[in-house]
Amino acid sequence: MRNPDGSWEKFDDYVLDFALDRIRADHKVALVTLTTIEGSSPRPLGAQMAVSQSGEWVGYLSGGCIERAVVAEALAALDEGRPRRVRYGRGSKYLDIQLPCGSAIELFFDVDLSERTLAAVDSRLASRQPASMRIGGASASSDGPAVRRYRPRRRLIVAGIGPGAVQLAKLAHCSGFATVLQSPDGSTRAAASGYGIETVAIEPGTSFPGFAADAWTAIVFMFHDHEWEKELIPAALRTDAFYIGAMGSRRTHRQRLGMLEAQGMDEAARARIRGPAGVYAGVKSASDVAISILAEIVQVEHALGAPLIEAGDT
Image: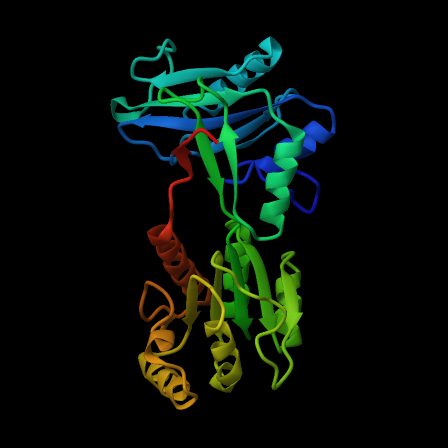
């Protein structure tokens, strides 16, 4: 992800945009994929780094143990012009690089990247569509080639007023979510805009504005005046959002569910709303509320997650 100042977010899960940008600037790029884990690993199968011939890189494959070695290996592969598979940890030729608890990982260094393929994947992700890409050939992993699955960047829509809404949007933005704050309050929108967060004005009597939330989107309502929820929550329930939450007390949530029942929302729809939103009960500061809610969103997302990489011939 490119930052507003033009730099790249180094420790990002999404690296193809960086790879495509560097290739379009006539740089050679190695795409490094985690294809095998023996023991434990802080990163999942399919995690990636992209390394430019200049030594600039994005992504990460460990807790900080091997990234410098990976960059050096990627530059060597680019110089040679051939893909390679390298083992780190137990059983590796690199005796000076050890992983915790005797674990081992294998990485595939792909130096034959197609600009056309990268552009097609990047375009699908930009349009909020899943994509896939074949990782290497017979040398990609011990078991043959693999298919890397890509999901659109996770997104959070915060609808609300006040410091809690701003803090949640700010925290999500810093955590790599594509974040939008929707609010009827100008000062709330101005505060969020100051952190580089996209904002949308909500006008009284409008339905959920501007977005068809997809399966990679979470929606959180942060209104103290719950009258705003009467039209907004039913609109959110008609989307494919993987998480819908609303702040407030347990009593408030019971009233919210009663309101939705009176509007004709069935039990299955009402059960989608998490309230009070968050994993910690009773927190009071705006920052703590934001941490609590974002933790629950990530928890739900990971419970629904699918593998990033699969064996395959296409």
